[in-house]
Length: 222
Image (tube, rainbow, N blue to C red; front, side):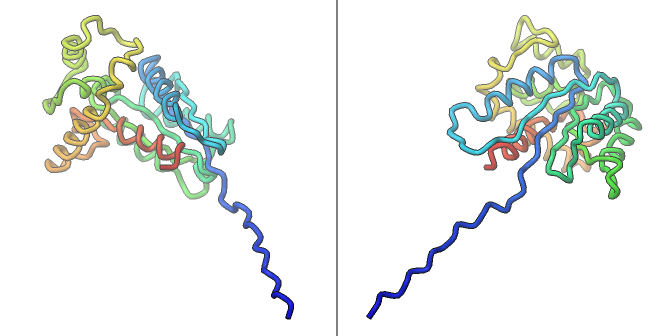
């Protein structure tokens, strides 16, 4: 009796659509751009990854104001063929201190995109009063409203030679988990008081840590 032939199982082709890229638009001249570029260089450090990873592009918007930034992003997306429908992730980094409440509210509406694709969906990463609050949270938990001047004065207690637009990533990196816990505390604090993070009233708060995690998950797939 002949042995029955074994079925040869064909390996299925990978039918998953390729993931898009991450585009981070920063209204700051250097502070935010430098930080995110340093972070993206650390994401895959020491990892053995065989597949092609999505790119993380940090782009200065060259515009002042939340509304102008969203409009710039839509223009960039049209010109460069970027689309959230193709898996691309677009993030707009905004500071509250540089915008009025009505401007932020209008930017939030514009960032939602629309069904016909003429306006792309943009994820807003808001910091209140500014991106530098993320720096401060590496050193202390502050739950009282801050002006930009007060924020910078506090930072100088920990970084004596602190100046805007300087690369402090190496100083901050070791305490990133602490900063994330502090940011989460502020998020819950505002939630319990009926305050939305995406608002001028959410001082102090920052959405930076949530987008750092989002970027890592998007790129590494963890």
